[in-house]
Length: 247
Image 1 (cartoon, rainbow, N blue to C red):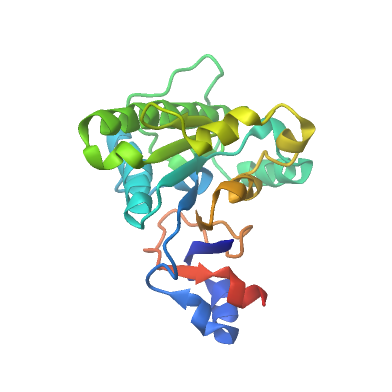
Image 2: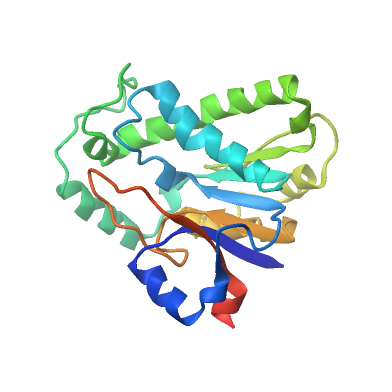
């Protein structure tokens, strides 16, 4: 079982890189068969992404396509399940929210036709963020199902949407080991609910079906950190092979 990351070169990684330069490459160290995308960090966008269609396309569709382009046959798009996040994370989120301008959005509200100008403040509103996640899952499902119908290259591809409860497996009709893996598990057991609230944990749920797992994230909880700002600099991504670092 191999595991590597698509990571941002930030201060923490620069320190690691000084001691293990061989672990960092511009191309995948090996071809992954399963790629896990941390959907939470993909919710944060550049200012130039200023419409919903562009948001869905740039942040999610293109990312999924790139993952299949790496050679993976299975891509998992995961999001935090707030019902099962640790108390410590809830405290961190509350602290971050205090640093943002208050964005009013009620449980009964619909997503606005235009993206909020202050996206960071909007995403600090948990209700708004959850509605965005649900919309992302809805449009991504439709996008992938259309790909299955229209693009022969997608016949052998599988997309898994991992948010709440039982993950949704999207692929061409027919029996498949991944569908069997999902259907055979009781996702309501404490083993699979407690601790699976965050994408950090969810990524490793899929290790049993992977010979080589790649995680796409800029979140420091995997092994890296990235600086947040209202005008983020262009991120420099590298592939990080974990085995040499952990040896």
